[in-house]
Length: 258
Figure 1 (tube, rainbow, N blue to C red):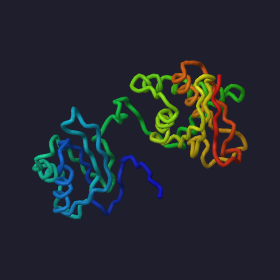
Figure 2: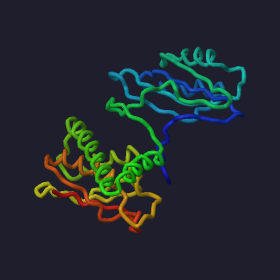
Figure 3: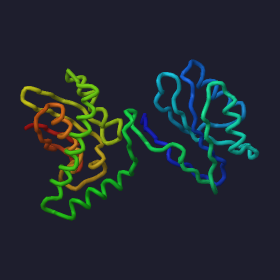
Figure 4: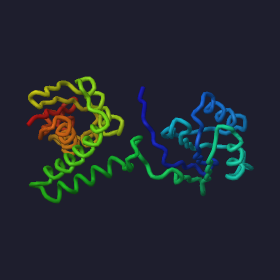
């Protein structure tokens, strides 16, 4: 069963009444159940949402899209109703226009580290990378790789300041950040710190999935991986894509070495 990490962006249905809610919820047992019960009693259906970071162990951000069949319900009524919960504070509510409702209450998007992030469709990112390659057929691929390397090295220097893995298993878990970000599913096959060599399998990489060009296409992700491993190993390394689904292989593989 697929477990997609859907990020709430907008809802659209001209026949339905949507609201988006953003609030602070107390970090106490029963708080979430109390809130869900309040809404359920009034026939309100929570469609999708998220929990944010817990601030100093007392409360965290919570936001969700909801649907109501009660046409008498409006933003003010819903805000007052939610505020009646002893577990809830700082409630903001917004309704849609002509059946369309975008999440404009929660900005900016951040990692749980606090670093700002953005969302882009895979097609748009691919188009940007392809534009770089097409603009310079000779050096375009190297440029895309270099962009990835710079990003990977910077991001992992920051990450490693928080936690530095001391085993192959711990590094394998950190590589799952690629999974968490939706870039690819990474599997650490081998790690040799003494020789600065890393072997990684990749599945569903966003540059490669669904493509059949006959050549490796994981240039940006390969650069990111090389930059990340350069930061981890403390020595310059390069990632070479030895297998790629775009050229007919069952998965992608990278060999990282000096």
